[in-house]
Image (cartoon, rainbow, N blue to C red; front, side, top):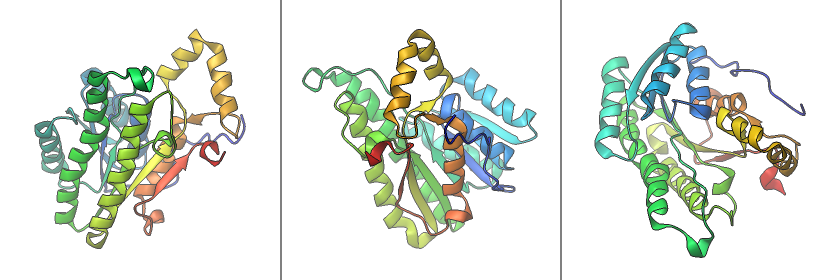
Length: 262
């Protein structure tokens, strides 16, 4: 496969670090949480999917890492405040936070958009990121620094006629990221966003089984001729959280195989 990165985690150590990952019960969030665990971090796994969240934490522990699962809905202020409090009470601090909770739904045309769908997606994708950063930034300011990565998307960098609501939420994440980065840079807190193209996940794999032509179309849409692997997303997140990116903040890193360069 062209340019495939087969690594499960980048060669970066997070030994002694505490990492909070939201949306970690499955898919990309799970891959990120497991990668940090393998790199030596104590991982706080946050999600509303109880079984999946516990499973992710168990995978980290079985691989020799440390993990704590917390049931939290990022769209609820009380849940987010309790999440950060539990993480700090259990591990003492939060060095890195990855805000990857997100929902994406099939959308109607722009003119026929559904208000309830708009509210659902804005609540998780935008309000959720805002609430998480609000409490993460407070904690990191007390500690004297930290790193935050918000999961945006290539849909946050370009227009997406078929998914205007989703694109709007990801553009908002980019705006929140830039604003937080500039507001808290002097406190030693770096805030960046990652903007993946299409990523291979178990959910997407099932869609490919139903429609083999879909995979061909998505591969062809990316100049590298393939979609991203979840491990590649995890590697990019880890780099943004590491000292290797110590002078990077307020940045939107496109992990898209050249998609947005077209």
